[in-house]
Length: 518
Image (spheres, rainbow, N blue to C red):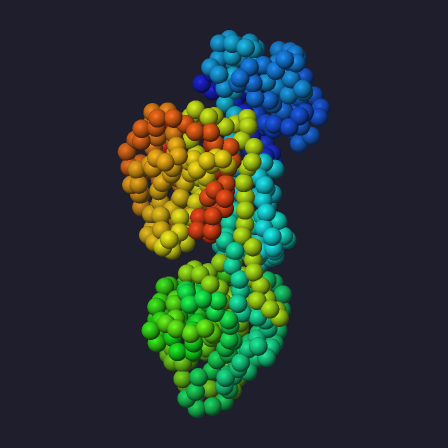
């Protein structure tokens, strides 16, 4: 019996980062499933004769092509440059319970598993950049700012359930003074603002109160003019909390004559109406429960003409009327207004004197050795994003790509419908069957794609898609792009949450694909 878990005549290694639930055996760190934790960096010390990294993982070197010339044996293990030699070749002998290949390297299955749920630390294999700060909800449901180049492990602000690693495209908030409605940038019509009147979703007392004037049958609102970069689709949003008024309207206008609006009932937590006017075109609306009575209300649409825009927030009476007799004291709380170019909302971008841009999130793995198997692969991903996906976009959960060619193998969603697929050019110039599998717009998508010479297939949420695809050859892939496509293409950004990515160095059977995605 060996110190390493052996399955199907292969020693099991896990390349994921250490977690607190790991266990130790004879000084070696193991996952709860029994796989030895492994790192590709050189060992810094020996434990029970095995080279270990300073984080407690077994240090290994890929010896699939043969043992390095400096290999020595220590306690029966092949060691090169203070790393254990591991091979993907079939085993030929067994010594001390461990399978070895014909060259004398340990025959192992090096498993790659990235779990972004319930963690606030990025695996060291992942390179992450974002050239700006970015907001997210932490595990306490508080809206927090992440520093430049810091990943965002987002949580549902209402249920506090971990959602995963947030990956978004670049967006700009065109509204200024997004938390200061008392500023002159906001025009108050038959209304007034009391600044810093309540605790905001950020946990700070920075929420303002919009109060109706004492009047007869008028509209009570605050508005701000914004610069429209181009005549396209825009999304307006704001965090709102009921007080003596419980209904609100949010809208976006272009040229002052066309646009979209959405009405919300903050007692029921529902959108009661959404429409376009003046030749505008409505795209969608939503209301998201935050915490402590807060909601984020959004509306998306396109104006008919014009070069100027307007973000509008209106009080409604108990019956939902926008013109009513104001009592001079009633109102509700506002915080975090945003207007952005795009057909759906993204995370909040706070502003003061000028419009500000949040840069895109970029995550990749640039060294796939030693866990990647060039002859057979299965990629599993869990991800979630609002559906349907806007037309003309192909958001990807994960892509295994070649940095030199157009070859890729990955997982994406189709545009403009609640479906997902595995459309890929693999190898270059050949397209997989484009049969899609329906996915619930409100649930996590579990998706796996498998490929080896002769056969490829994918499954989504327990259902096989398309038919087996005849693969003539396997091209070289050398980079993993997370939450986007090769080159971080704009229209391939997930704009959602990557929850887990698991790689198997073999082609799982169709039944296994269904099982792991069910």
